Length: 330
Image (tube, rainbow, N blue to C red; front, top):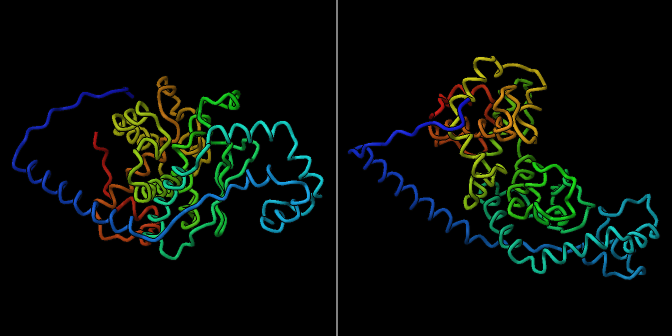
């Protein structure tokens, strides 16, 4: 798989002028849509539980437990929480969070914009109570979406180069940055709206995660595509330029209808790179299956723009794939 492919120069013609007109028309329509979404009366405020917990005197712990019962497992006595307030690691994390987030106004603006989009596309979904907390740098639970509550582990968004993250693999550390918060929250929300794939085929996994990635583009239109995938510009360019060869590999190896669980580990789950078992593997971005799945879903929507969001979510993977007429662009 070559790393870069030559790009042919296009010739301006009557058809390209028509294409420019359609692009401009689409931009005008998108602008009107964004204005409509921006006008929605939604305002997100982050409840700083982390501050409340560390600033409360021991006699206030029962009051906090009553206010946030889901954050205090019943099997632990109050003395455990008082001890936790004084724990050196907890104090270190709290100080780091306070230093990194002296103000959370930008975070609240970003989340407000996200949930306005969520409400537009999913009007029945409740707007959650958003709570910021400290969770021992548990990067596998940076955000938790449960019913009408959204938990954000602020100590997992201190920046990829933060000294507290030393020892964490680079590909994981890369997304421990506030720029990826919206993408993480959107992904968690979308997962609550989508049924898990019933089929065990690799194609079903591609389409399932491709739908999530496509919906993230609707909910986060101002976020650059590479950031929605957690990719660097270099990784994004590699995926774009090698789409034809990725698809060719999947077809030649007859992977689409395989039920081998290792394919999910190789191409879907977080990893420093995707595993084609080729010499070029170290140059590939991880989770390339999610990116390719999003391209298939995008191809379907281009051919079937009348399909609603809810119809898209319910459409079986094989039907979506067949009706997408997906063909790599390069």
